Image (cartoon, rainbow, N blue to C red; front, side):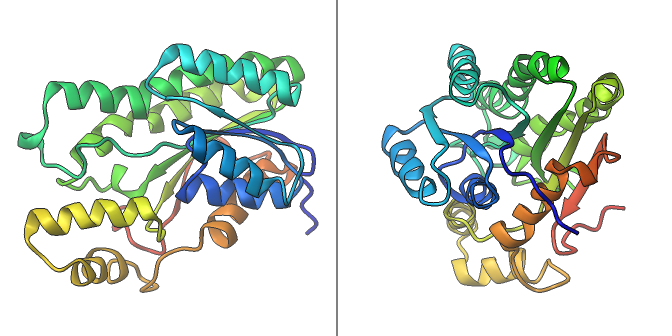
Amino acid sequence: MNIDINGKRVLITASTDGIGKGIAKALAREGCKLVITSRTTEKVYNTVKELKFYNPEVYGIVSDLTDYNSLDELVNFSIEKLGGIDVFIFNTGNPSNEPSYFDETSLKDWEYSVKLYLLSAIKLTKLVIPFMEKQKWGRIIYLSSWTVKQPQRIFVLADVSRSPIIQLTKILSKELGIYNITVNTILMGSFETEGAKRSLTKLAQKLNLNFNELWKKEVIERSSLKRTGDIEKELGSLIIYLISDYSSYITGSVIPIDGGTSDAI
């Protein structure tokens, strides 16, 4: 199978660290034209510089997923630089008050979390769809977590706020199929990123446990494969396939890539 996604125009959010950056690097290597984003100017500059080693057509812009005006600017910038958008990959960071139990959250935490995980996805999707409809081709991929189907008390903000994306995926797949636009959600397991380590460090401190022991128990031992995933090799390859024409009959799907971590059917 020869998968060719060279030249595909991709917008991927929260893409200067961890999961987002790993995917961006995998796509740059395949010849995709990219717009990457972050809330930090320095991270955007450094990531663009790094990814241009693989592909000169990588552009970056400072963008805040919880600022709707910023999202308008992001899509306008992407159209200006790329000439269009073929693929929209929605990725996010984490709220500052996470991990947390329900009784540790405030209404302000919930408002921020819903903006970050849900409303920004809706806003950006509404902005990119017209371009995909016009060209009668597109790919929308939402990155989420296995915990959406098997909620964890300690991640109540994330698991509740982003669970509606699964329903959105199914509904949009029905509406957009006639335009050759596919819509899918990926439920990720554990990947060894600085963000994941920060979250578990907070949890270890909250529970007064050793980080390494907690990492082994909650991450490594939960997986059937007893390891974390490889962002570029494994997650990146799945996304490369979903972007390609080989995946054109896959839409409205919720696809786990979690090393067998989830017990959900």
